[in-house]
Amino acid sequence: MHKTLFAYGTLLDADVRRVVLGSSMSQVSVVKASFLEHACLKLPDETYPILTEKPGEFVRGAVLHGLDDDLWKRVEFFESDEYELQRIAVTTDNGVEETWCYGAGNIMEGASETWSLANWQSLHKPQFLDMIGQY
Picture 1 (cartoon, rainbow, N blue to C red):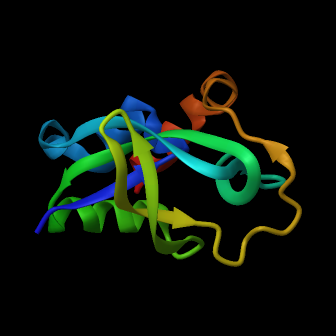
Picture 2: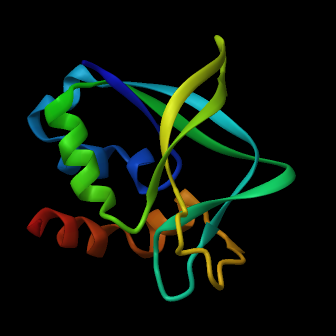
């Protein structure tokens, strides 16, 4: 069974995907997508983002297609239990697509600053890759 996942944070980075998905990364296709009426925020004292409802805004991300059971387990391990898995609808060039997403769960407290992939890459990526590589 293959699942899809909307990625909106560090999994948008190809190097992070390479570590998380390992040698099977080539079977996964990445399709640009947007999640309407939401924003991507940074948690205080953390480098990774969460999603929150925000009328009039949208989150740019990507849908990862081709995640088999083994790859899904790797993604679950990476996301940990801080996030809550939920079914969402995102917009791609081909229209609306139903997919899975790791949402905020109960970790929203204090999140107010917008999270940016480019900012994360310039400030935190090398340390983050070292950390997840150990896992």
